[in-house]
Image (cartoon, rainbow, N blue to C red; front, side, top):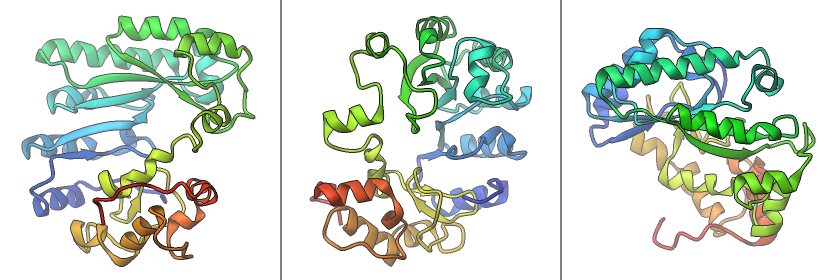
Length: 283
């Protein structure tokens, strides 16, 4: 939320004040490789024994070789690479001005560093958002991912009106007889695609680059009032607004205007269906 990047000094203090932390996810909206202090962050986390993950995704279009080496040298655990095509022409349809060949070249460099350091880390995941313009390249993308030692995963697009899937039977065959759109997923499962993100308020709370508490990775419009860098991690994650939001998501409290979840379609769907989160042992 907002423009900026995680500062090394903030990250260092954050780890020093929270020695029980074992893992930090450092990606969300935006591109981590635009952070000029990323290498320092990776090195410090490794020195503190804190695992770094990049599971929300990175596109690898703008990254220096020393940072690619740092991903391996400082033992980043997993990195999701957003690659929505298997050719330059198809890739840049969605990743506008992106360079497919450069991305693949950077992945090969990471693999070279893994050989040099005799490391299996980071575990690399090829994430492929399926569209009508790239569905024909699913087999080629999966094959190339295998050649590069990457796990291959598909993801449903947020906007089914942009380049809708053309051959649903083909796509289902490629992705394991799963729904091909979010509407199909909702019809099959009785809930929104991605509704599991709500659990992050308990299990994996998201913090903005400036310390503001966002709650989940879906929230890009408001914060919960706490600041993990200023107020402390536990206090900011357990302030009145966060605790109230958890009760909202469990159906124990009505919506409130100062809680970001009130503006979220996931919560609206949950409330309309009276299908709230069941976490009986959590406050």
